[in-house]
Image (cartoon, rainbow, N blue to C red; front, side, top):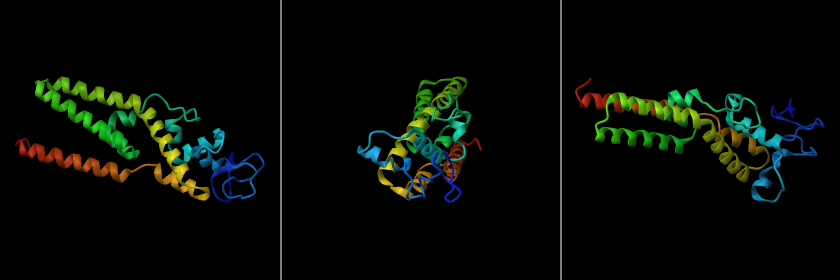
Length: 194
């Protein structure tokens, strides 16, 4: 598909018709909400790929360098940023799981009297797990949110709804970082280390 000069979407079919803003378009892959409700046979692959690009935003090829929604195997941002990356990508459930797992491991290590070096190894292992799984988890998250959006939105509402559900949440990640920073400072102050 090519880019439409009127609406700006990658939605011009082989006949030169924009399937988003041209009511007379003979094939409209953006009508896949019928697929979600079970009234159609299949989803056009091109439309699914375009939905993914809208949902992810400008970093689509960072996650899916080969296109076709095939995620790459490693995510450096998730490795280094962990919970903040999950929040940034609006994966709040995964962020809670990651944070809970980190907290649980810290408590267990503290109760067992594990050395600080071993705690660091565990933290690195948690980061490696995030780096290895982040893109696959993001693909699952994206597919679920796209399906939910297509079931609820119709016609011209699909593209803005996908962009709103997807994209990023920089403010949320910064707020989470600020909260963690305050907790660390308060903890250090209470222990007399600050």
